[in-house]
Length: 201
Ligand code: SF4
Ligand code: SF4
Image 1 (cartoon, protein in one colour):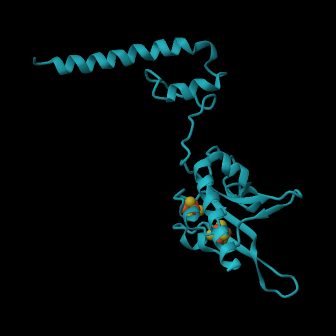
Image 2 (cartoon, helix red, strand yellow):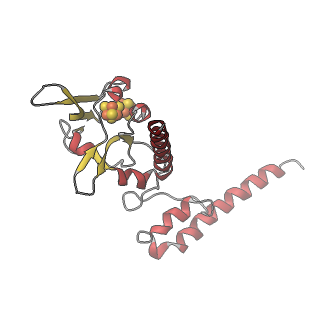
Image 3 (cartoon, rainbow, N blue to C red):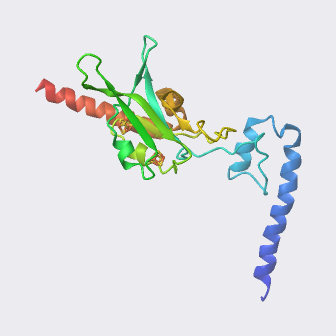
């Protein structure tokens, strides 16, 4: 019958319209205090259309979401930190807008380079969040962060992140990207096992 498709389409629109208000009423008393609310509304069970009331409400970011890069360090049992970065410079080379600047540590006696960064800077105003640095790092030392709330009133130096500001523990990485972390740890364990087997021969 002519026009039936239009009527069906309009019925779907009306259902969405009504669902929007019934869902609003359902969550009204716990709109900003129930952490499950946003995740329910973003799930396939959520009905209607809704506006995220940022900053009181924040959209959950998917695991693969990437914003700025950060540097990883291992937390040792004695409480010390060990940078994964060896200051090889690959990330700086592949960075398309060239916003990474690294200074390698030098042995004070021999003056020979030590595989650790003395200084590491990223100009976050120039970074385009492409993730190349994380893709190419051979040591899993730089990864893409989920934190997107970095606005500041300072236009000059605040967005040039130094090593201290860039560094986060491996446990943080494991928390925001559990799938990638598990895959990398498994690959590392397999590589170690192969190395040990070669040595034993
Ligand atoms: S973050 Fe990775 S690629 Fe960049 S200098 Fe450090 S070890 Fe090399
Ligand atoms: S995410 Fe891309 S632009 Fe940003 S520092 Fe890494 S390589 Fe450079």
